[in-house]
Length: 331
Image 1 (cartoon, rainbow, N blue to C red):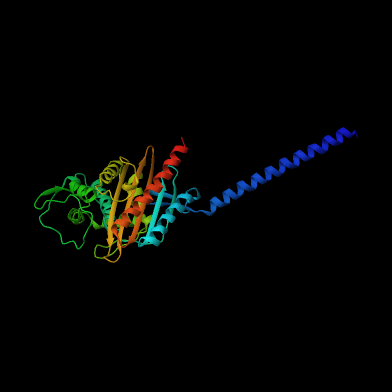
Image 2: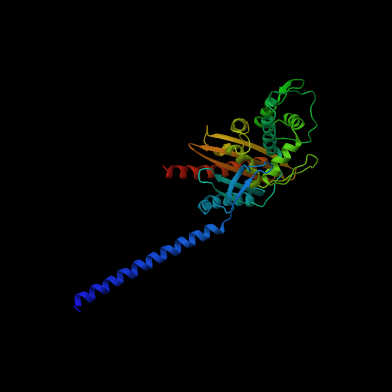
């Protein structure tokens, strides 16, 4: 056999060996990627109670996104700094990028009293009732007496006028936009408790009781209500848009909005809770960044309300800067 022929066969064998090795390596990598993906369970939550359908509420991967590890670390660092130097005892954050469906959470097991954040659940319940009872939002309700509400709120806005009549739609506006507690009490008196309970049951959350003095959320659990509104997956599109519109008119500006550029579109709700010895301040917001939207829920505990509001703002700014960079890189 000629020497050149032998050399040719030898070189061909080397090339084939390298090609097969690379192909095998790539197949192993693909297999590992699939396996890693399979290790993260994907779940969906559907509404029961219908004969032939089960409407979907949300669809999630149970694992937080590794792509958001950097912003998770930044948020954790901010919280730790406040805990070490500014008398913050606890803070939790839930973040979701609606465009990628990726999410991350910091201190996800910590529970908080929602305070006025609970008003969003009542908003959803009232609007759900209006879908079953056309014209309900135009029902006139008289504000004949002040309610004995044992809460001292630091953030107050426009309030109902005693003796005036208000439609349920107007009461919802006062409850969400101005966080008025008398309006909330009137709304509570005019919604079916069973509708509110069904909302929590549909989401798989513990059922609230008006007789109970306390109810607790994690940041991730509370975020489900804002997701329902944004995705229009529980209310019809008209009512979901109305709910988001009310939230976008909230007069509270001493939290997440402080960390955002002026005129940033935000649909949000804040809540105060806790005791004199441990104050709680929370906020959940849909932030509209050009064509992208993200959800940020921050729940905090500490000694000083101003410090907590600054913490909300600093976390908000860090997330906004991160998302802005992501948006620019995708252009």
